Length: 392
Image 1 (spheres, helix red, strand yellow):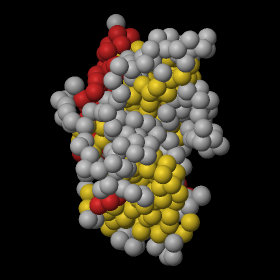
Image 2 (tube, one colour):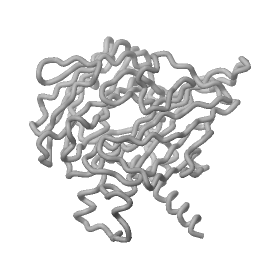
Image 3 (tube, helix red, strand yellow):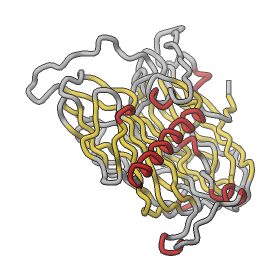
């Protein structure tokens, strides 16, 4: 069955969902042994005026809900359903299939793990409104529910504006904090208990308007803590993370901010995976001019200005990651988890197109709109509290 999906569902960090209510979902019941890959779109909109050279990677998740690994997964994309106003770019490492698509080998997806690929799109002639759809089909040998391997992703063109897209890589000992997972090898070393490692994350502006000032939030899973963060960050203990404000950064379309955050694994952390880290970002002054241009001309935005300069696609403003833990450096075994995580809560990396593949998400499932609203509310409150404290 080929499903048309107009809203994506993501598994969000429990700390954020508690602020707005949660939706608990029991572990899946398996009809048969084997992999079960579910394809879900994350991005849904593109800003008017996005050029081909700065195409936006539409995020699409491939989640293996089965109890067996999905091996040698291939993703096929068909863009014949897009209107002429939308174009696509064939990512490096993928193979064009005629005039209307391409295919990418994305490797293995372990049971209970996911990966996120990016599908680069651009707005060729600048018209707003419905842009048609493209089809994503995951080819998975032995999939127990093949009808969930295919999805049509609707694309909407919105007014010219900024469009932040957040990416985060799972935390390993040998990860390089450079905003991508290229040339880092397929085999990664877990962080030893008591050790530290960088969190490789990135905040892209994939819109058609600049952003002046970015705020972002980093939440870590239990068993990990913030080892270091930029000076413009401050601790939020109840979230086990930090909120950060860079008021002066200017992100032109196609530019990226790389948060410099380092993670420490607790000395008594169990070997395995710490699930449920996330990064969320929002523009402080979207569509603004340079700081030196603004002077004392600040004023309340009109309704039309808010429409023009709002976020193009808020649901891809957050990304999830896990922390992989190995034995302590002394070689002494660390405690093991008493209960293994349920399928659907794991992390995964692979080679996708357009945007690096990301890590996994926690086991709490909720609508992505709820997750974004909750994360944005937490970050907004945190910024207000900090500013009030500084003023006093």
